[in-house]
Length: 77
Length: 146
Image 1 (cartoon, helix red, strand yellow):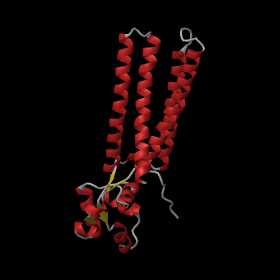
Image 2: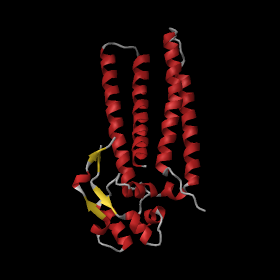
Image 3: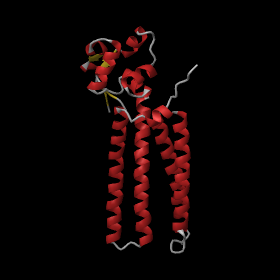
Image 4: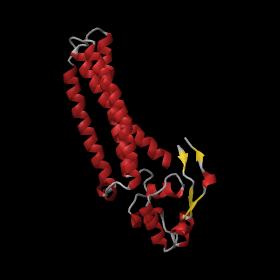
């Protein structure tokens, strides 16, 4: 399976927002805490809708949360 | 302090189904195989054992699924999120291939005149293997993302 070439700033943004927990963010965007964790670790690429919801929770533009890095693409098992 | 559960409700559910199916139907097929090896295929009352195993599976599944639902009532009643739906979809695709291979094999066995004992249990084995493959695929996907 190919690892997604999209990096994100969710961990830092959570920290900057009163150390919001993964569970709190998950509640606010309507997914499980494990899904937030998978997104944060770049193991899962969220849908555009969930990506926008995350950006909305932090009050920033989408590109402040996610970055496309073609060079980061690599195989994982 | 509130301690977050490492496994989501749906991963726990997949683990329960996987272990219940593999354990109980594994017992059934091992017992059946033992009867075949001992040359008792014609007299072995497999339908009685199968009914008992199925009943036990329902009891185990209901009890354990209710138990994890009580531990995580919010997650249990919430709809699956997009990642969980994707994992379930992929797992169903894996199970489909397993059941198709099993069905094709049974069709060939019927065409070659295999007795009902073998075709019935062979078809049932294909269904069980498909369910085990489905749950295994889900568990692997959940663990890979953890």
